[in-house]
Image 1: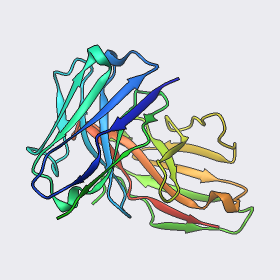
Image 2 (image 1 turned 135 degrees about the vertical axis):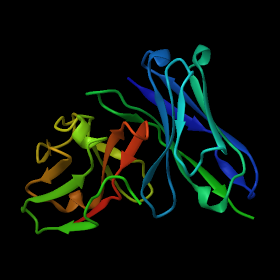
Image 3 (image 1 turned 30 degrees about the horizontal axis):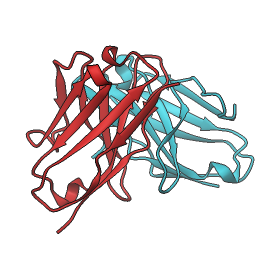
Length: 117
Length: 110
């Protein structure tokens, strides 16, 4: 049974940094690309970043490029989202997700990040 | 601005059939990439109702079905029930963005 569990959310001030973590289990962690998706209050779902299975390749949404960094440590089945220069508009529930071709997409339950002064 | 287009709302009487369209481009839906459909209630995480265009997870009623044609996909709900009221999102992968793309969500009202 696949599980993805996020942690690290909280309340921070604008301009601050925060690191989210997502621990995966129930699948061969190092084989899969992994994603971060966010949802601002009352808004739709927005893809944030993706990292390849070996951690060598990453892509970002334009809204976070240059401020967020995705990384992974396959030795402990964990991947991360390092967020810096946080803005009020980054306030959202952040989900980690795994989706492969023709397979059921797995999501975590989400962690809330609130950016407020 | 979402990459995929969905109607903001659809409604139907109990027992009726409704469909939600999801329109993309050749770099996502039309490129042969999977389409997933999620149902979301306020304050909860999205839940998969259809994955890989047509597959239904265990526990999801067979009243839910999915299809794809060209650069569009659709979610159909037949025998509409009050419990089907929720927001529904479509999702695919985009080869130009190298990431996931979503529709803006459709509110289903019974």
